[in-house]
Length: 164
Image (cartoon, rainbow, N blue to C red):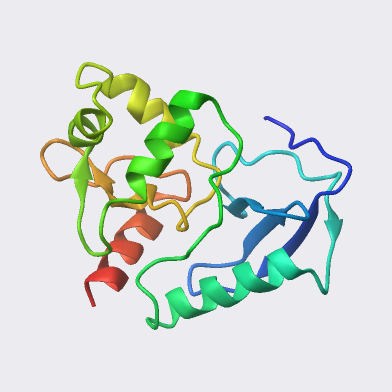
């Protein structure tokens, strides 16, 4: 398990149709969005609970709009910290329109690294901003709903939600 490290991390749990979602932020950006049983959920013991916080308030509003069907995407100001390769993959995920899917190979090709399919899959599996960086829109070559850190049933729900 990884740990998010910062002296100024704040967190808030928000209700969603898929269960509680923990939002984690610094003073300037949303850094994480995790379901309770999220694989690779970092230790959040250093993050303080925040009732009023500009970044968390904006993120909560954006997630509420998404889950209510009023928004196709959850906007984020910046992609969370990661390696340069991970950030490149996560940015490519943000280009997949709501209601559509891409394969891991298509994402690898989109970033100009068609032979890096396994590395792309690894980066997608470490996406710290579930839903906001839409890794749920990536499927297997045959269209199957492959792994999702929040669980395949949530992935199925998210895709159906986006397709209306």
